[in-house]
Image (cartoon, rainbow, N blue to C red; front, side, top):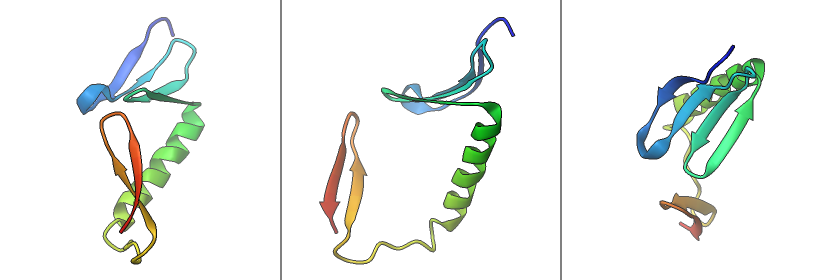
Length: 78
């Protein structure tokens, strides 16, 4: 493998690509996660399951929730 291959792009600079060394790089803002192909496939499966369960997952009142801004993550109570 001799060059980077972009697998997909998202908004605001989000991108998933494969480097010449074979690792999968998930870039999201100023965060980069690096995976082997096997671990990336497991991660993608886990994310797919989470998406499927979003409607069923409700946060009980009083627990902390996340609000993501452009450069920060803010914790608040609901």
